[in-house]
Image (cartoon, rainbow, N blue to C red; front, side):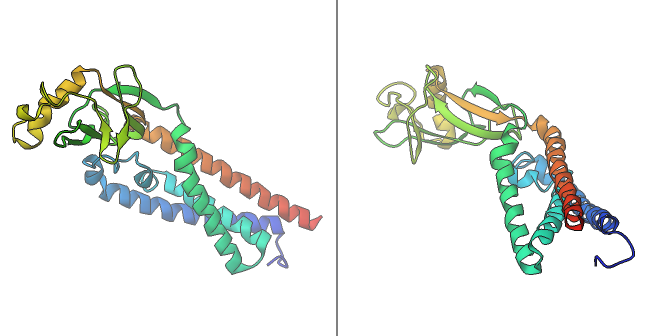
Length: 252
């Protein structure tokens, strides 16, 4: 391919532009279709499946176009270095997968400073509330916080009135509340399903136990989309520059 009438840099520039734009256009159309089709589902998604959730975030908005551009240029770069098709494809897949895993785990949570706050316990942030016979109440928190529907909860735990984490086991955080008297006593719990536990939950709130959560608000969805798109665009431009430098180095 280097023995053509055009220069190598011009040939590479045309190929990168045409194929790169085509990849981004295809990814953009797919993302647009998925975003439109899943709109009603996203608006009523349960905790952990909202737009800010890592799995959903990467399939909505404009970031899929940035992923496509980065994957394409990464493949070109690896192909120029490895110079064998199948090994280059395998290395490209491994590197792209590693970046896709590292981004939501290590980078995206810190694109903007996360918010930390404490919240009272209620149906929105309590996943399960166990009252074992003769034992202390056990509270298992949900990956959600009251008043912030769709937020990406990075961490959540139950703390006591002094702000210290409450010890937990497989059934949830163990709350040292009296079960012999008061709202959490066995005789004070009518057989009314979850509604019968509301007085006990209210008592736990009165004693000062709270959910302590660190989260990224839902309102940051589009800022995160633009920032992450910019990061992938910068990586793509860097790899593109390396490709042209590599060609120039081989010609010199």
